[in-house]
Length: 82
Image (cartoon, rainbow, N blue to C red; front, side, top):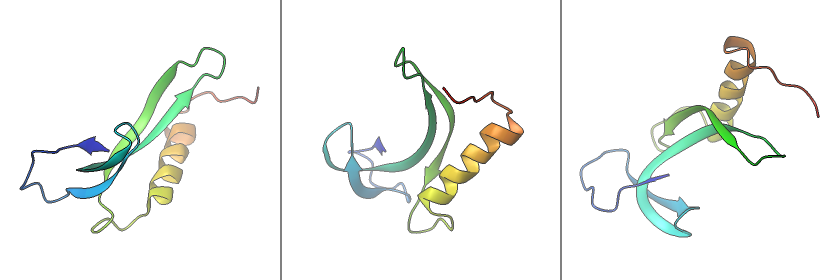
């Protein structure tokens, strides 16, 4: 969620929950795919994309699965089980 409290004419704006603000805010929805290192708590953004629930065909889950698929098969990021 990218909070845009003063924007009035961006067509993808919607009221939605913001985890960082801990309240409902007006903003642009973003779906992110992150890698978090459990030992160091460091994180890396692997992929992200805007999400417009009212006009987007795919769901958030569809976007997430596609981003994970791209990370494994297109970007060929090395994953291993700990």
